[in-house]
Amino acid sequence: MRESKNKTLKIFTLYLPLLVLLVFLLFPFYWTLVTSLKPEQELYGSTVTYWPMHTTFDSYHKLFVDFNFLKPMSNSFVVAIITTILSLAVSVLAAYAFSRYRFKGRKAFMMLFLTNNMFPTVLLLIPLYSIMRNIGILYTPMSLVLSYTTFTIPFSVWLLNGYLNDLPMSLEEAALVDGCNRAKAFLRIILPILIPCLVATGVYIFMTSWNEYTFAVMFTNEANRTIPVALKNLIGQLGVQWDLLTAGGIITIIPVCIMFFFAQKRLVEGLTAGAVKG
Amino acid sequence: MGSQLKNIAAPDFKEVIGLLHKKTTIWPYLLIAPALIVILAVVFVPAVNAILMSFQSYDLRRPSQIGFIGLENYMEVFQDSLFWSSLVRTALWVIFGVGFQFIFGFILALLLNRKFKGRGIARSISLIPWVTPGVLIGLMWRWIYDGSYGVLNDILLRLHLIQDKIPYLAQESTSFPSVVVTIIWQGIPFFALMLMAGLQGVPNELYEAADIDGANKLQQLFRVTIPSIKNTIYVTTLLRIIWVANSVDVIFNMTGGGPAYSSQTLSVYIFNKANSLNLGYSSAMSILLTLLLLLVAVPYLKNMFKNQEA
Image (tube, rainbow over all chains, first blue to last red; front, side):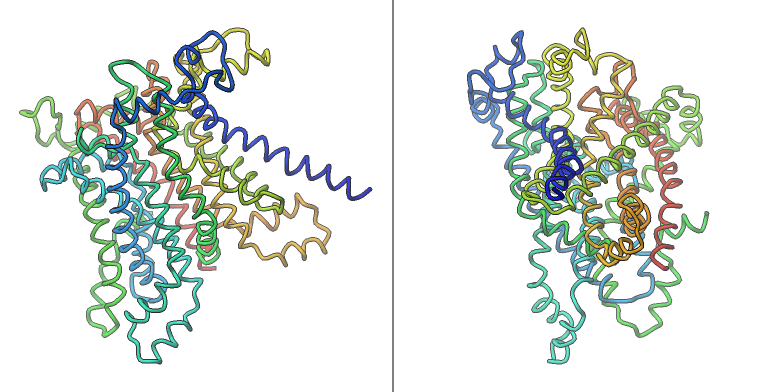
């Protein structure tokens, strides 16, 4: 009796609200997928169909053959990979300092790192554009790498700081006693343990660089434009072609979705550590 | 207030200099140096640049007139009715956007924190909107809202909730609420992710103690859960307020701020002005936006650090 009552209760307090939220959150993706698989007549027909009557991969074919979508994909990939490595390296050093040393100005520096995201990107966009032009890296992947590295530092440092705070000091102390110096202790002891967390943080950085649009549209040209810009540029002379756009959308999110699925658990763990210890 | 601002804007120089006289290790400073250099180069130098630009006539369409003009840009901004209407819209955008993101994100986090079959998958897939590029979000929703072939009209027609198709993004009365729904949709996962992490850090003994004291679930929520994750709520809301206030890509890709500016927030207005190459004017507006955000953020940060001390 109680058992079944509990079950009904669970349906109404857990499964039903969860289902409603999930449908809201996921329907747009379902709709994007369905749209990308429909032939044009069905897309702009008089009745809306919720599953394609005739499934076609034409739009994907067109995307890669006529619009050379591989090019922006590889551009995005290069920018995202370099940014990930650079931002991770810089962030892990800073996070280590914040976690393992108590030094003067520590709090002020942490504040500085956090508020770095405060400035409207539009504010930085304009001066950065002329700076990039003056030092000659405008319209090169470097300009994006530099920008994305900076904007991913605060959250990355915060995440890594959380992970590091979770590692007991005694680990390094043992190494120090054994005659390692701090750098060696960091490289031999801390870094290997930290690898899963570095992967999770790296996924966040990769994702952010892969997705960014505002800087990308200003700092790139035809030759090195990234995926979000290419996606937006599909709307153009021919008006909006929804089959192409949605196909492009599906291709864009698949890589980050796969990465995210693997990193999700670690990400929550890192955030938990950060949340508990501030 | 003034000293608070200084604390955030620049590290305390006395502290840095004092260090040189001490024999304390310079290691932590060397370790944060690379990150600091990048931040200074990419954020602070341009920020100073933008401040200078805001006091100049800096219109790339009229390069001969570039030069300092004092406060003229700001005076012009204050008389610009579009600035004021965009500002009000930014406030609504942040209040409704972040507000509902928080409510639904919190509900989602509470649900995903319970134990049930398939929780891992539910967690992963519910966070997908967070990993989706803003451009794509704008385009996906534009297609959903489409006046002629959009699926939202079809669903509402089938449910007999509306009689005629509505061009959601093409008419002034519905364009802004429509983009707000989209930003809510986008922000729920991030709130859920952060709050879920916070919830996992709440010790179980607290709930057991509350159970013994006879507190019901709702009381536990307000007396135990929310106070325990207060800091996470602070950080997440602050981050979201800043991101949402500054976000350009979603609105830009859905309506461009139209029709007739009816969905134009301040950051979209600034972006549009910058695109039309009037850089001095858009810099002045972005400085004002930053100051407003600081006004919101400073009490927030103050509170956060105070909580941490305790």
